[in-house]
Length: 602
Image (cartoon, rainbow, N blue to C red; front, side):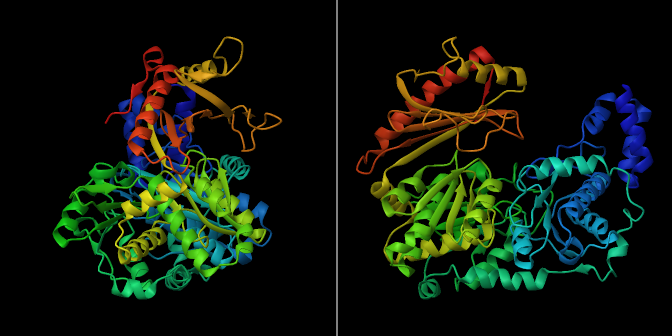
């Protein structure tokens, strides 16, 4: 095997004290299994802006005891540089229910090892004693004014994966330059510190605090401020089914319903308790739609429930489905639920704040690949709308900036079923989103309206916003560079395309190069990144389409939306037009035959 691989494996054998991962590496070396060794030691996990995410197993490419120790040592040293009062303020750590028996890895074990690292350096740690939803970590950072937070979770990834998600002292996910700084500090602290492996030392430490009870109490107290119709909630006849998809959400959603005086939803029994095997679903991701909801549909039909609420395993996302009069179930897209929740939070705010002058300090945010429906509502109602780059780290940090300036951020969302309904959590939160959706449905029922009917009313009032998103699979980086390079040099003279098939292009923004021809100086307002590809085309017919690469998967994604002005109320015609636009983009810009791209498998 090559020298670097040999060196990495030798260092591993010297440093690893977990008998299971140690033994598996010894065995691979004995068998001369270069392919597997390459998978374990090919490259250290990248510490990106959401932290780490990778399969559990042996080696520097995987999540395991040693890589958790190394990562936390680097993070600890970086925090010591950044905060002179780290030993007074401390950090919070929590975890989901993931486990990987063959390598001895589990979220709980990783959280304990991370806590050991900090406590060995005299730093207080607020370690939850049991599984929590991801949003409870940023909530605790803000609530207790801590320096940082760590959540051990791989969210809705396949069962063998785990992750290490990091929050800064502002309660939002880290953004540059911290990711680079932490990465460098990890490389400088690979040798485990003397007490690194002895997690029993935390149990009697005066530096260890268990925030579970007090944070639960204060989170649900804060949540009550977003309950607008207690009387309706007490009397509602609307029935709900909830699934936590073998994750951590069950108890927390039950408590959220109680906080709103709603009858707690019926839980899908096979999926209500945490189970790292995720036995009833192929992928534990409610974004996948109907496949994940099969058991929920059956229970709802049995109990005559009209609404299904589904969290992903770490309960930071929410999917909602509603039984239609036809008997069919409608699963709302992330953009549709974003429209409903945005409308609801604004309507509820306006009832409490009738003074028009207050509008000048009201903001809503969404990511640039999400529906522009909030922009349309903001234009008509007179509040501010801003878009950010993709991902809640950008919305969370921007929301915090606005709040520090005395503004009110009512709502932020992204199309990947993530919603920030209560800015006391500066991240997506599937617990608050679930109960607020339930109150919305209960309120609408008093007007004899369904969620679907209200969504239609929003589109009639503010203009239809119809979206379509998909992707092509491409494993070759050079092909991806070539495809995007050709879009920047469409005519051979370094110009972008002026049309796409029969559709005229009215504006182009390229966040890889920083070009935006809708700005007076042709410079993009949003931050740019040369390491990822992202171009947005605005069309003369009201269409907007973004093509971008994924940071975590071998995909080129597209997000297309047709935004019609109010009054254009023929959704079928608009759908036809959007389909024609998407077909033109696939044919002219993706050119799957030429670049040998695989379409998304249905």
